[in-house]
Image (cartoon, rainbow, N blue to C red; front, top):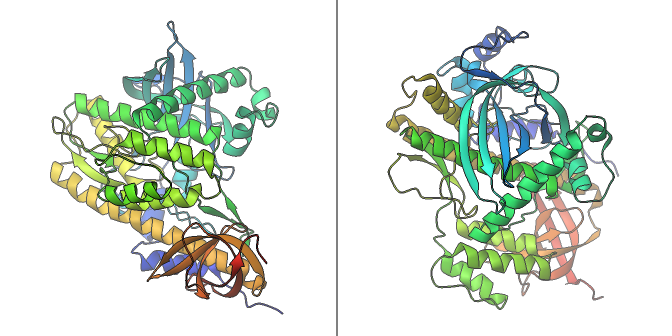
Length: 492
């Protein structure tokens, strides 16, 4: 039976517009981008350090070209490790209130629905002029910090520099190598000193992660299916596994963002911070833990919640992603808020850090570009480019844009899953019940990792139950997948 072709690209464009994005770059933005001139022979100006000789490298997805940051580390004298993170100086080319800037500020973020990517900046910028790809000299903002043997971070200096990426590495390959699953990747072996450099970077990440865990950082794992596409249709859905390389970059960026907050605070400059508030629904989180036989304290406590989550990951790894998702929903999402130095910060409950922002991805997130401009105003000794009122407006708008981007990506994952499963109507699948309420009963399949609603024989099903379901219907245009409950998994 031949199935009608579903144009997922058109669905993606329509979904972007439905959630208030402008997916097409206006003519003026394209015109102004085309007239930007990349500086092939960068002159080292006063106040800019030439760091092109260092062994910089990046780790990202295999298909990523919009590279925001590269890293370099060096051993210190007393067991500490000195870290340098270079962030692309996007502001050098995207000036405040330009047509490019206004469009980026409206969308607020790059959006990654899977079948097509909607970049915040035109490709010529984010994949070219402002990308820290190997083989080109780039302006950057350098963030330095020191990691002590116990994982504590001592913020260092921030300054302007010129850098050159020596190796573009991939999460999966570097992760597998760091975890001992494969031998040294050829790209690493062929670059003199890179193996030792990456091993030292991994040591930094291990220290940082251990320290944050001791402080109560939450070990969460929500399953987000990555859409594999041939450009026209969906060929697979795969779970993006957390590994040593992803943890490495995550830890480096958390520390770099904290260093940026400390820098702006020392300068007395109002900024935007990234926060996750103390959970409003802590009692509901306590009830969830109680179902697993764990007793959490009456008042919100990150360390207790962290211990509970670590234990559950070890005891029941199959159901842990669904527990993580429940906790994430009850905690509430992250948001951007203005912060004036001297005031009491809200902090980031999930990361177990007090002072945090987003400043390491200016090619992909607009708030990072704001933070970069604030830092550069301190470095250049100029007036802050943003008034507090403007920061308040930007923080509120960008929080909304992030939520909208998440909705686009979530809908497109459902739509892509519906396309992938369409030829398999009538087949039987194994999965877990992820929701059971008056709003409906939902099941997450194990393979492929798609979620749908149980439309028949759903009565009595409980969250966490492992079941066999029959696929009844899929609707890619509305992102619907319908199942019938057959019996519990393992029973006939």
